[in-house]
Image (cartoon, rainbow, N blue to C red):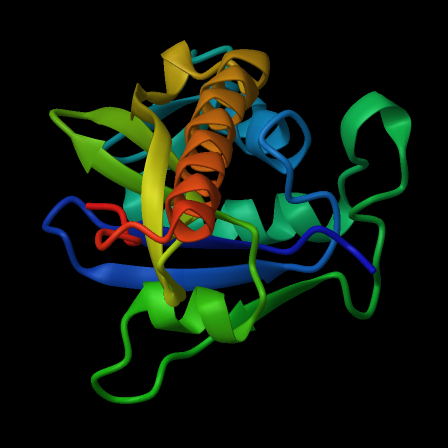
Length: 190
């Protein structure tokens, strides 16, 4: 079974253009790094200009299109064939009316969610991991472990942020268990 992830891409006006579901290697240092590296490989333009050495992304729509192509044919971290799928592996997803991307991610059993946006001609990336309160595991909250310009994304640092989040959850578990065992009146955490 793979580590699933959702990628949502918005245009410059905040309109959702595309949702991508990745079935494998969705980790912050795998898909997150690959996505960031791909987005850093180009320059955002308005029209296609001659003489630009780097890949040109002609607006958000072009970024979204190229992102799907990249993920369908590119290799994953350390040369693994994570995304070499003529069929499967990476899919374009849709949402039901009124459904949030977070709900879609939960229904897809996604473990990570990446959001690509644009701010002042800069490509922005938000990487989030799910966090459940110990006393209500039915509600997943997507907590950002990185949010900023794609140029600053570091998969290792994002994983360290997730580990800190996981450690705080473990501390909550220990505190809740101790409260339950002591028979105290307050057996839930804030």
